[in-house]
Length: 381
Image (cartoon, rainbow, N blue to C red; front, top):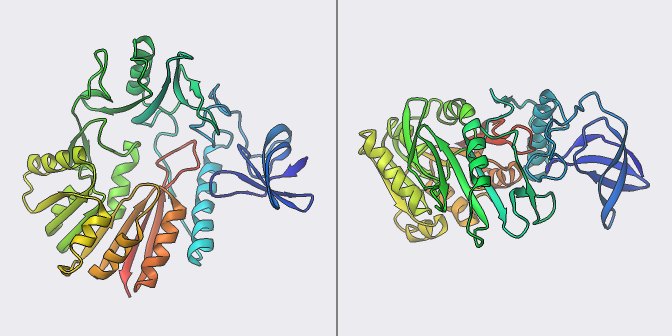
């Protein structure tokens, strides 16, 4: 089947139409003319992969990574960087239009200073039987054996090489690795590799963390993201949901009289408390709890809030969390998300709860992939 790629859709696939059917093509670029192989059919939808590039798009480049197409980590290496940013803007616009009925006529995607070698955190999969270490292959649970990863920061690439030379326990299936100013932290520990505590300075704040606690993967974008997320925010009481090790909690504590951070990971909350203490900030409290349970427990003790910031995982916020936010009646809300679809879904719920979209900006936290970090500000209507 020969198709022409019309645009890039959420999920990173190319859209085409042929023989009366809609075709989703992986690893395509807008403007490509391709011969494709249909891998799966679902009603009027065809899911396909590239067999031959008949006519390459002007946006298409030669992927520099030898694992591209097999490794499931990157899916935008076939596009030049400007095209990647345009595609990500269109992905966010598409999600908001389809899922929230919001037309984003203009959307800025802040570029990453580093398009390669930016990733300071990774999860490596291990297959002792095949003696493979790397990432899952595209669409499977087979491990793609990766010698050199083009998106890792040099320190993490060095650690990957050391891990490849080590004798990992046969039962070890995956490793979390993260870089800080003191080196690398791995979890779980084994054979001389430790879950070390690390530190990192972002803007004017110092953070400690390790591989068991989440920290954003692209440090070069964080200062701009923080500036937009917090902007002119200040007041009496702020709530930081899914607060992690306190990336937003610390700067919020300098802008509000009182801050409450909530996070389910006990390792992260331990670091958040220490980060506040090390910064001399005593006006914030950190609570270890699942957000849905936390909102249920305080259903009858709600207090007025000036500001709520939430930075949930890819699945977005649970319905009870959205309801809890609306019931708390903050003047302003900032929603930080790595998934435009769940962000659009939750933004629609918040608008239905009496808020209006004030501003939105996207940040290229994940170059060479279709993923994009997006920040939304909402105000009480």
